[in-house]
Image 1 (cartoon, rainbow, N blue to C red):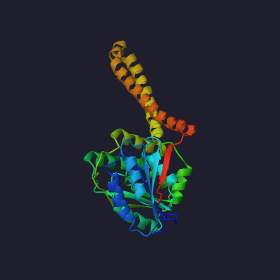
Image 2 (image 1 turned 180 degrees about the horizontal axis):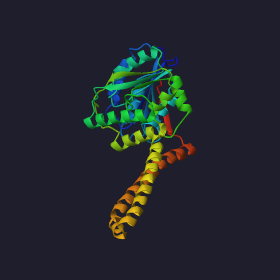
Image 3 (image 1 turned 135 degrees about the vertical axis):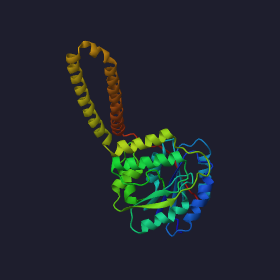
Image 4 (image 1 turned 90 degrees about the vertical axis):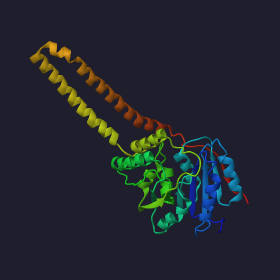
Length: 316
């Protein structure tokens, strides 16, 4: 393989406290890459790890031509790390994957076959997922809900193993969005996407970096970044509550006239219950509106989604 030529394939991998998996991943990944016909490079993005991840990556970089280590100034999150990798990669085909080996590197040739067939976006669906029952159930519900809400047809929103044509990556980089959801944004630029089924393995070592709270935040990014559905629901709910309040007020006035003031006094707690419900609905609506306004505020400030501390390339 001619390392001096521009790589045809770029592999982008974000790392955050994955010291137990660095060596294993590199061994399996480079074994696969040495068997393919395309020229390649590997972009490893250290997302502010506070363990030995960076030092292990730099050690692998010294021993493996084609490995580039991008060190971010601090932890910016998985999707910001991927954007940093996109900005550094040079390949015509870009594949992203997790560092925990739940995305087997041995599946990469299947994505390359899809590229060779003319597809510009290769989404993957994890088969026989090696996750807890709760995560699999939550993922199934989320995938169906997000497909209906956003109109983006993906069977597996959470699979990191994906392939992107250079034009799609350029489109993503030229249209930066605050906390964007990259797989969904890629669907917007894709002309000939495809979904393929891939294996999924159990995490080899270490703990998952996605807590329930982070997963919820990720789905909120997808929801508010690609759909106006919450605002429309709030409009419908608000209209219904306004009609209900008007009807209830009219009924109370009529019943007060017919049954007298004693009945109205006895129904005061029921009225309070409806008031509390309405107040709660208002706060919920303000929260959703605040999420959209907050995204606008962040976009207007135009702060970079990441800051690169250093880019380390192999030196023979």
